[in-house]
Length: 288
Length: 180
Ligand SMILES: Cc1cc2nc3c(=O)[nH]c(=O)nc-3n(C[C@H](O)[C@H](O)[C@H](O)COP(=O)(O)OP(=O)(O)OC[C@H]3O[C@@H](n4cnc5c(N)ncnc54)[C@H](O)[C@@H]3O)c2cc1C
Ligand code: FES
Ligand code: FES
Image (cartoon, chains in turn cyan, green):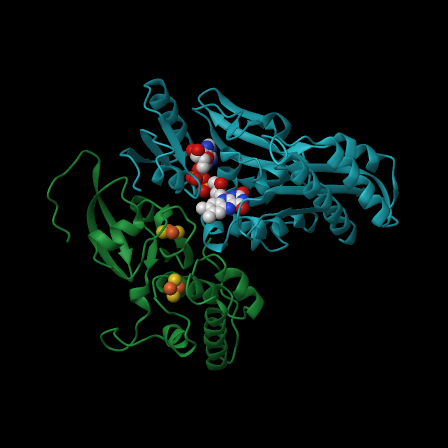
């Protein structure tokens, strides 16, 4: 199908974009930000979305790229494509953040990743999108700019449900900040066909002692078991008790994770997937 | 083809660079790149199937990188270099098959041919970024597009053969930068 008519605006800079957004929102013009278009244009072609105005931010090059702050945090501009992260050299994407680069192979396919953006994924907020899961796992901070100024939103507060977030209708997502390196983190998932959105996805971030094999704690997050990606405290409690990194620990964490989630649909199946995937993710994280 | 019979509100004049040529079109903002290529510019080599990013029949190169032309409004393509399957031809009038197309023919990488322009542009984009792509990498990348006839094996072999031939022709392998 073809999209419904709309008015196209090309934003000159961030202020231009937020001004347009707030004016058109106030006028009831139903504006939407257009980034990579890999979700929005598909939805418009289907007429699942019929915005009155599109504000194309594709030319805002200041929103593009990766930068490491003085405190070691990784800042990723909203317009950075999945493919740019996938191909970022170590000089730009510090080795402690390799989990982000490795996760990109799960995001759609190459022609989707060359245009789809990090900010677009977060703003779109699909329950199994890799960026949303990584943000929740690693306590990322989402930076939004609107007429009232700049807001910093914790990933834990950002995702409200299927395709709904804390972003206001007149706010632009400008950047996501991953506050600290996660050298022992891994993400894995299951989809019926590689490249599709995951049925269930799992990610873990282990805190491993200097000896390289004693686990002192860590985090576990799952996608596809609720309306948003979720942390799994029951599984994290198993990690917090500590132990030697190995198959027993991996399966204990996985059992706890599967027992703690209550997927709204296909519950048994998704619990089974959660268990397998958490176990796999722990093993991969240990092997890093 | 390019005659405009009516001008609904929202039409805009777009300047596009397609296969190295500057082209101007008057189109509604909701016109996708694939529709402008086919309907306004008459470049019907690029096919269109699902219109939601799944099949890959519409794949073209945008600044050298493979992209779905059905998931882009033509207005977004202003200022970008667009390459379509029509650019792969060689010879004085561009009517001879290029090396990648030749490899597809030799390896029987097409049957009905509906998917072929998309696969060609996908492979062209892949090989320009990663001339040393392994067969496994090629297999993973071509999974982006749908072919209901060939079973993919012959497509992988054609791309791999073309890559090998290009490598043999350029003795010093060069790392090409990807467009950001
Ligand atoms: C075939 C296919 C397979 C895919 N598979 C996956 C997958 O496995 N995993 C996955 O994560 N994704 C997948 N995607 C989606 C892809 O990752 C998109 O890139 C992503 O969901 C949206 O990013 P975008 O830049 O394309 O955003 P757009 O489509 O341009 O926008 C999406 C939404 O976010 C809003 N938005 C975008 N940027 C901003 C901003 N800076 N500030 C405020 N609002 C903004 C838009 O208004 C819109 O509502 C797939 C897409 C396709 C077509
Ligand atoms: S027509 Fe564009 S991906 Fe199918
Ligand atoms: S050759 Fe028929 S779909 Fe690929």
